[in-house]
Image (cartoon, rainbow over all chains, first blue to last red; front, side, top):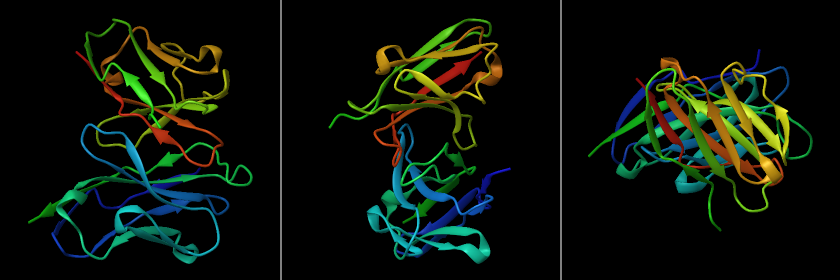
Length: 117
Length: 112
């Protein structure tokens, strides 16, 4: 069965520190992969996506993610965290449906990020 | 460009009552999705529409949940009767060409 796993439920970092959020996937073929951020009371906002090509993907708000096929991982990184980054982060996968279209999104459980001043 | 609109934002009902949620997707977006997000979990797809036809409703509890998308624009998701375990945030998303989904703010449902 297709699945996405985020091993860390809650991560706390200090403002200005680096950040890495982990994501592992299990799909028959290489899926399309996404990272979303959700602030309290808000909908999900897409940070970045990986379809194919360069395995290091740049996103909005200074985030990047690296696709590693050998480790079935798609970890999210940011070199210096800001207090406004405190939110919940979701990794998601989808099967290739042709071109840039994809099937239904399967989400991980989410990682809550707390930022200390 | 206006985003995905949802109403109401919050709803509190008692078990066995019925409730309906409304979604207005981004103009021109052919695909519309309803997700259920239970506290502490990631969103789970309930139903996907392409225009006014259903593409995937495999995870929709059809004995109590129903959804429609009349005229291929707005959509309504209904629960009748509600159970305690239906307490969740219901997210609507839309996509123009299947390459990116845009999410609304969600409706937080509490069933007492």
